[in-house]
Image 1: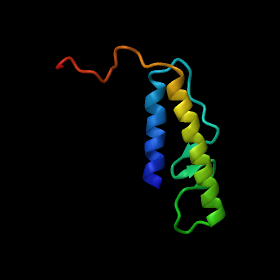
Image 2: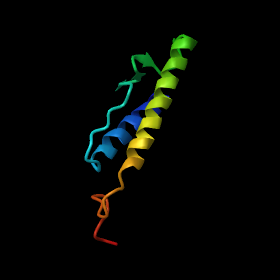
Image 3: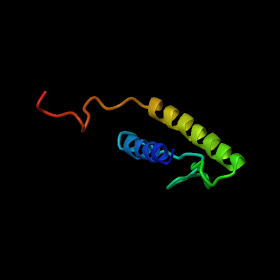
Length: 83
């Protein structure tokens, strides 16, 4: 689950490159923590893990809305000239 949180953070950072407004998630993502709660199931209380998952899902909802709010530019920096 920690790797998944890292991927979500990378998608957030990547998607900001193509938008005019910065992404402001409701819950901060720092390492393996979302909103201050660890997503690691091992050595974690069930209630705290559940709250971390809720916060992660909320952030994903905001990320999806952010990505859909503005169309991508017609030319992408990822597109290569090789065709």
